[in-house]
Amino acid sequence: MDGAIFPSKLGEVKLFNRTLEDKWKSWDEDGGLRRYERYAPVTGDSCPPSNRLQERSLKQPSHFTYRGMFIDLSRNWFPVHRSKNLNYDDFLKLIVDISAELELTHLHLHLSDDQGWRIQIPDLPELTDFAPQDTAEGDEDYRFIPRYEFVDLLQYADKRRIKIVPEIDMPAHSRAAVKSMEYRAFVTGDETYRLDDPEETYDTSSWGRTFDGTMSPCRPSTFVFIDKVVREMKNNYVDAGLWSDEDPPLFHIGGDETPPTSWQNSPIYRPMNFYANADYTNFGDEYQSGEVCRANPSHCPELLKPENIIGIQGHLWSETMRNPEMLLGQLFPRMMAIADRAKYTRSWELSNETGLAILKNRHFIYDWCEFKENTKQMMTKLSFVTDSFFFRLPLVGTKISSWEGLKLANELDLEMRFRIKDDQNGSPSFREIKFSAQNEFLLYDHMNDQDKQNYPSGSEVTLEFVTVFYKGTTDGSIEFYPQTSRVQEVQYKIQYTTASSELCLLSSLTLMLISVVLF
Image (cartoon, rainbow, N blue to C red; front, side, top):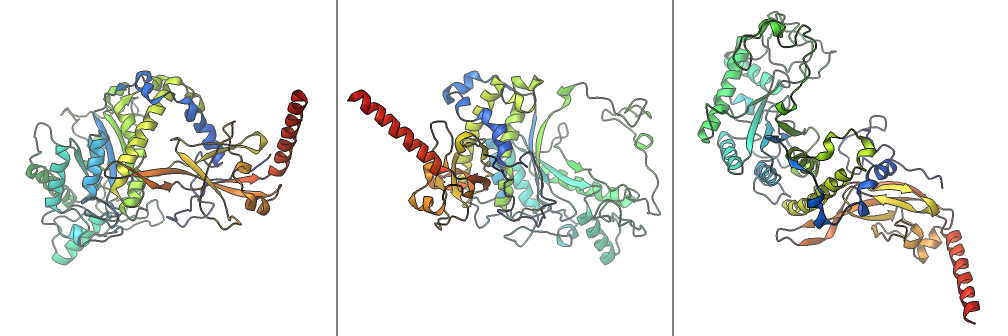
């Protein structure tokens, strides 16, 4: 049968107003077919028994000392305290606890951007009072982390061996800070911390929508502001008892996406050149022009010592997330995969195999199967933290095979269910799937008499498939009511009448043969 397989529906939960032309594309653009071909080698019977996975895996602890996760708190503010569905007193402490459970080492908090400033800085109340403050659902009295709460968070994380990495993004992505300090100068006349050049004009047709949100390095007051912020961040660690001059904590400055036209229309602008202006290396030695990138400053030398890479970090940006559950839904189970890849080095990593080929590598299969089982156990363990379900479950992969059967697969070998879209019986519920002896899904095996009347042979229907996961509870038991993935649609042509007639004829001939033999 030449059946079309359509892409999965991205609009089950409408987060964006997108047209078909700007719908995000991925390797799943061809729908279930590509998913099936990608994951069939590592599902079901390909996995050895779970009690043999550990002995077959050739993983080794990695050398990475940095295993981190990045959370964007600026674009949308996620309430520090309880949300309406969260069974946890403090959202950030929940993330710390999960990070510790996954044996991460660092939690990177993006505390400032164009949309909001999320950390209290003494003597600069404008940063949290005036700055744009986009907020998620469940708004609170304040939409930033007070100083005393940040100190408490540092201590809480330290007890769980998690290091907090605060980030103040600069010089770009700083509109919240720039406009706050502009407002401060306007109200008080004090330009001590001003970050913009009031005489600068902007080319609004250039790259960067927030063209007026970049700190100006041409103003000495910019560096006064930076010094103030960094010193106050240091004081937080001092008050938490976590500051060490010999081993100071990490502080991140972002440093990305500065529009190329920044400062060019500023009267106090002067061209800057890294090689002409940099003074010292990280080791305190003087820079010489051309030393950093050899003879050609446009091409830096290739990294020859992979051991200098200290770790792996996953990033989660929050522009479109309106509540903690949505953020958690983007984190899991991807955060588990990041933690696993950061913690272990695998034997197949040095293989030259790529794509589908590596899925047939037996060592990859063993490691994947072990990871899959560990992930399902962790998902069950973590699912109680919210009343609403937040994991992103894998879609069902489908492939049409012979005799009108469908091959089905999903990455985690979860239970799968189906329903007929716009069912003429009026039943919206998903049905359990029974597989044939060939491990295929046959619609005829799931049709009752009413179905057969509504859908005669030759009918084309749209089948909807979902994966199913059962939530855990605080006492370790499993809730019966399942949660489902997004829907995967498949166009299916019913030919059950012909197939059943042939089956009946074959059964009759078999019975006749038995009769002849017996009598």
